[in-house]
Every structure is written in structure tokens, then in C-alpha cells.
Length: 535
Image (cartoon, rainbow, N blue to C red; front, top):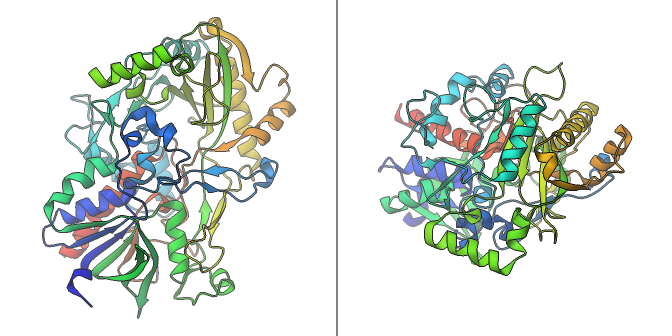
């Protein structure tokens, strides 16, 4: 082997988790780290302008542009499943909302066998990543790599939404990451000085100057090579040439909840039945690889506004486009600096639940598709998200061809409870919109429309329009039991010197947007890895 292909650690995937992991491991100058990313560098201006993610949502140069398998309980529809294919991964094309989830989420992980990953075990790593605008709050911290910004200036529609929610019995909450999540308020976003903060910009960019970290973009890993129960190397393609890099210490797979199980399966790690049917030699039988897929299903309620105060109005007027463009260029302020999602709420859909089970995300814009061309009228949207689905899907390779995208089957609404919770959430969302002062700004309901009245009407609407939010997780589950893929140190069971570090290890999806919890996972994992090799 040549010396330029020998490293201590090889990290596969420079997404949200991979950038953090490579940065933290390379902080020890003795470690030689290789980071492989299938996509390009994050040079597109639309990555860095907060509102610009609409330009990356369907861009195949920056996005895998995946599609699900037909989902039976969504009328057999295939759903668009965007995934970042660029430095920073999905954190370079997402909505930038900073949401930790509920402390109970992590206590649930611990009860499911993820020892050390309870709330007390993960809070220090949330604090480590944060550069928060609050001071003197024990639940927040300053000085971390990820800058947290509060939404501003506040929008008239968003203010009205929060007040209407309060009138519906939903308490106001100015900090969804504080002592409790329940309530309505403004979100916080991961931006700084009007620019997106991804882990590529916050962690990877400063780490690349250290000299012991090599980043290979446009490098697609084809397999992890194992021998005698150890991960030894990674084979990848770059520029049409197949190469193999060797890891003296470990291989860390951080390719995300779709690509991480795909790579393990291509490497002979997974269900024996699946691998043999695809002509792949079994290295380690782990039936849980690719199973336990979870995501937040969403429905979108859209409304015509009776005032020209929406983002639709900004984008449909050449004069207002110039105005908001100048506002951003001169002061890094205005709609371009904030992203689309401004206010929201975490709500209980019935008295029988002890914590919020649905999330509302309020947007001063409306379109037929998320990140699509805006409607020609003044409009706004309320997204309703199912926070803790019971339904489980899977990710499975279709063949041994590394260039063929795997089968993604989210299996939404397999649980009747999921359907009923989302139904109640959508009905509550409509009630909030139809409550003053927001009601006073509504001209008409565009979706689902006034003809949607009965529970059956709502169920039909959900089945026909429900879409993936793309918070996939769980496909390399952390915990114990035969279906667990990694242990509490994120080591792949049955293979030494191989770990998975990304959202795929979540036993259950967190209650809210998953980018910040994924950064936390990588922060905690990096410390575990460094501690193990220092022993």
C-alpha cells in the first residue's frame, strides 16, 4: 500500500455527522484522517443564503433526488426524498431549524438499550455544539461551533399565528429547547450574519487548515473491506478510478440513514437472506441493517391571505425582489436571511398524551410543492408533522451495483395510531388558523379546502397529499437485541474497528427537526472514539 492511502481514521460521508466527526478526530494532531464525500464542495451560493434551499431541493448536483417505493397507505404514491449530496450533506440544504427534541426522547432511547444516551448523557454535547444568543441559562451555552440565531424581524402573520394558538389553549413558548417544548413561538435557526451554518462551515472549514485532515469530494465509497472480523479499508471511486484507502485504527460510516445501511449491505453486513439474494458474500449477519426506518410524515394546509404581506408577494413582484435582494446584500437582513419557516408550535392532540405529539411549522409562503414555485396569490402554509410515528419502514439495496439507489420504503401510516394522531393534528391546525387574529387575515382555505369536513374527508386528504419531511433515521439502530446494529459506543456488532455515526443510529426519531440531534450524536461519538484510542 502507498503511504498516501494510509490513515488512522477514514470517515465515509461528509454530511452533518461526518464533518463533525472528522473535525473532532483531527483535532488530535497525531491522527491522520480521511473524509470521503460523494458530492462536490459546498460552493453554491444557494447553500449559504438561508432562503436559497429552494434552489437546492431539486438540484441533482447537490441532492440525491431519491424517491421512495410506493407507499401502500398513501394511495400507493411514490414520494420525493431529497438528501444532501455535498459537503455538509442534508445540513447544507435543509430549513436550518434548531430543535433538540424532548428530554423524554433520549430517556426512551436509554430504556430501549441505548445506555448512556439518556437526557443527562446527551445534554453536555448539545451544550458543546452551541453558540447560543442567550446568556446565563444552564440549558444553553455560548462559544460552540454552531451559531444559533433568533428569527427577526418578526412577521405579522407569524405573530398572528402565535396569538391565535394561545387563544386555542396552546401556551406561548419562547424557547423550544428550554425547560419544556410544548407551546407556540418563533423558531431558532442555525445562521450567522445572514448565512447558513452547516457543519461543513462550522466544523470542517476550520479543521482543514490543520494539515492532518484530507477531504476527498466526488468520492463514492463502494464497500468497507473486512478481514478476520476487523474493518481494514474502504474502496471508493473518484474520477472514474477505483482506489482503496487503509485505516490503521477505524472506519466510521457517516453517510446518513439511507446511504449508511446501503454501504454496510454492499460490504456484506446485513440480513443474510437479503445479501445472498443480491449475490453478496455475507461478512457479518446483522438482520437489523436497513430496518427500523422512521420519518416525520407531514401534511400541508395552505391559505389565501387577504393582505399583500406574504413571501409570495415578495417573490412575485420584481420591485419587491430587488428590495429584499438589496436588504440582504447591504445588511444581511430581510426574508433572504431567515429561511422559510419562522414560527411553529409543539402540541398535544388529545388529553391522553403526556407530551406534544404533533409539530406545527408556519411559513409565510405557499406553493404546490415544498420549495416549488410560489402561488400567484398572497398565501401562507401551516405544515403539520407527526412527531413520534409507530410505523417502521426499511432501506434495502436492490442489487450489488453501487450506483443503483436502494429501495426506500418508509411505510407511512402502517400504524392506525399514526393516522389518527395526524388527523387530530390537522384539525387542530385548521382551528388555530380559523381563530382571530389570524382568521382576520385569511381570504380562503386553499388546501384542503372548504369541502374537507368529516374525518373521512381528512383521511382522504392525508392519504392523497401527505409527504416525506425527510428526517429519516433508525436504520442502524443503537441498542441491544438481535435487531440492533451498533452498541452504546456506536460500534457495529460483530465487526471490530467499524462504527456508524449519524442519524441512522437513533433508536427512535426525535420530536422535531433532526439536524441538531445528529450533530449531538457526532459530538458524543467523537469523544467516545478518542477516549477509546487514548486508553
